[in-house]
Image (cartoon, rainbow, N blue to C red; front, side, top):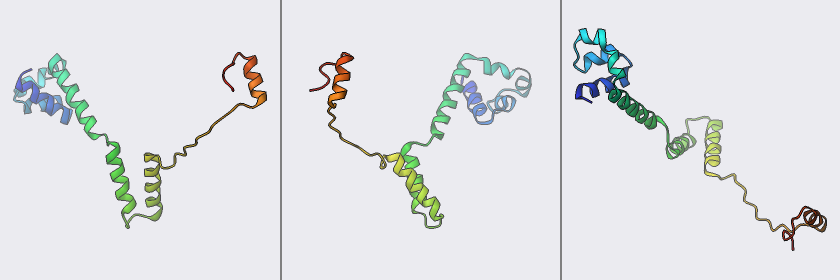
Length: 127
């Protein structure tokens, strides 16, 4: 891919305007008006456009850490309504697993359950 094609792709990714992007990349207005769409069909240009578009989308997605920072800022902001602050804390608690209840259980099948398991071929499943 040429430097001019690269510049075209970068401008096109930012503006979505084929003609304007071609002119900004250094192509003549005559070429831009008549054949700039051919640049989008170029394999190298198309691949580079996909790459920079995906990168831009990835950068726009908030990480879990960024979401936690935002919610923490809302929860601590005294100018926010109390209900909004509580909702931010609640959401943070859900994100970090604060509401997860861990239960340990030592389960031994009752006599009746053991008999059913034996009938179903579940020997060795009980003591």
